[in-house]
Amino acid sequence: MDGIDQRDIYFLINSLAGGGAERVVVNLSKHLSVKKIFLLEKDVRYEVNSPLEFISNHTKEKSPIMKTLFIPFYAKRLAKVINENDLVVSFLERANFVNVLSKVFKPHRAVISVHTYEKGFRGLKSINKLLMRFFYPRADFVIAVSFGVAKYLEEKYKVPKDKLAVIYNPVDVEKIQALAKEPLEIDLSPYVITVGRLTEAKGQLYLLRVFKEIKKVFPEIRLLIFGEGELKNELVNFSENLGLKTYLWDRDRLMQSYDVYFMGFSKNPFKYISKAKAFLLTSLWEGLGNVLIEALACGVSVISSDCRSGPREILAPNTDFSFQTKEPEFAKYGILMPVFEEDNQEIVRAWVETIKRVLTDEGLRERYSKVGLKRAEDFRIEKIVDEWRRVLNNLIK
Image 1: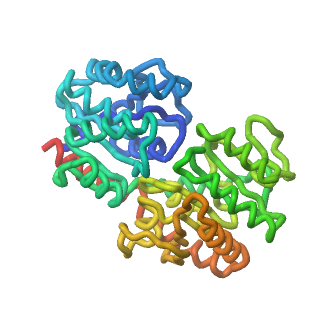
Image 2: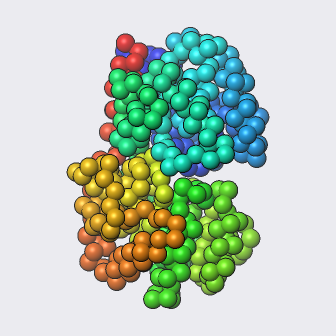
Image 3: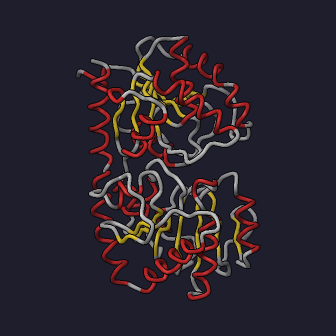
């Protein structure tokens, strides 16, 4: 067989500790005959079919500054375990930097997959901006997860258009829908839900403010938040300061008596998503927003910020992806909302009123459930894998 099935392909990512890009690596590796997955850190929570090799002994506990300083060492180590002309596909910034830099030590084909659209850069992120500007145009090829990300890379980081392609992230629809049928550990209904790392980008602080107002009208409703991250303590404290009784996965006993549930990482959040009244994404910025597609596959109504980039491409694919709404937009496959701004109470009120409408309008929820299931089919893993095969085959001709 010709093409990528006859060429050694390796994946490279920071870790498999959980997250959208990590799930993409797991899904793709099952279908692209990946010889090995290299990890910069020793942190694995997903089950994979491909062999794993750790580039370092670092873990998530290692300082981000130290991990950045170690990029040259990671690159040199990677170069020692691959051959010339091997194809290495990397995911997420630090792995992408390592992939491109390692070409200095061992000429190979470096393909980078870019999953983020950064709203702003502060602290260590400002260093990332400089590294992206230097390394990304020097990759052999760049795959963006959305048209918004592709435009961003072309305009901000001067990635040549002829080295750039857009491939949406794949979703294992059958697996998600099977997992969605599993029983819950505890019945917490009625509830709304969100899934994502506990970071500034995901906007969970705003979500808690909105939920506080929702509770005044629907006192029985609960909020479930799945994910881990550096804002864990800040978000829990903020929730408690709002007067919301708050459950924390590594502190409290799981009971029905809480208002807000910080559930931590779960290999199967889908069983909770599928039984929610609505899925909420309050992100300030995204790359694509994998979890939106997964929520659609679970048959739940989706309310999402119209942030850069991805949600509009998923929920309103026939509109201009560069447009951002200033008011609630009941789009074809879900509801798009204004992106939160500091001290903008009008936006908070718009979110509150929209969520209230969804909670009280069963017909609206059913309609979005049906069309969402149909939309999820467009991201079916078999379709996306075919696009990856086409791009990678063109690179090794």
